[in-house]
Length: 350
Image (cartoon, rainbow, N blue to C red; front, top):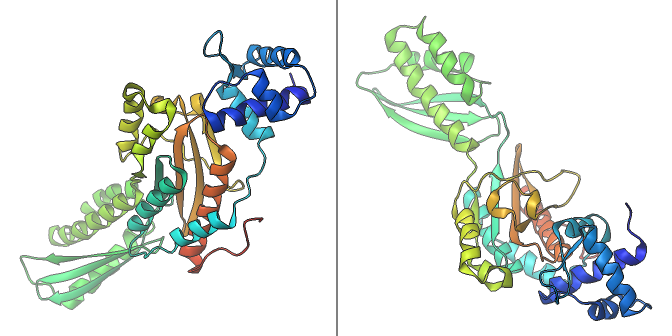
């Protein structure tokens, strides 16, 4: 059943007043906020209807109303206005984006810290590699008669190398043949496909040749395993305690423990490429620890088939428009900074 325009104005007024004040909202506050030319009795009746339809909740009999997850969802989908970043906000974000990047993990970790400071909510950041990462090429370099370096390049252009020392000498021609075997039989395979291929080769190769092949392929598997793991960097977890909803340690502790786990799962990585942000409200979250909280997240492009995700966790009483605008701009800035070496074009009005 569609809501009337007046009910929508009242719902929006309740949500925006509650976001700002963290106090249940009564009819008088709604009348002032929404500037409705109707009586308080009419507003109370409309609020009672909204409560009956599941958009509002009344925490105490004599108290005003607060939004429900269903109410927040309607607000995010239909009622929320665009939040225009101020020049000062964009300057703060741009300054934060001028990070000295030495490694991707460091960038992601620092990005989470900056977002936590900007929003005053716990923030998380992670990178996601291609779902089916493979090894593109093996290069083998003879260092000494009994030592060589194996260089592994993945299809996402990540390069890793390792020095191997052997108990017996190895000639240049033997190393070249080993490289040919590896590039013929073990490139283009995912992590799960490497072991079966090793088993097949074991049935045909000599023991000496197989030992060398296995040595390098196991290293390649370690590289793929490392790159497909998705550690989550979190920052500002203590920011939760600054919000009324989490001032009880009994309520805050389960969520703080969940956010402290670097695996941070189960977690929905579901930002639509066509949308700048995604908002998951209360019960929509998969993880039990997030059932009374909301998650706002934005994706950014790391290049070479890799994506990043950055977001915040907080109470359902969150200024979704402001948080979404800040995260969207920050993610866009990271994409440009990593891919283009500069900040995004445009201004806060875009």
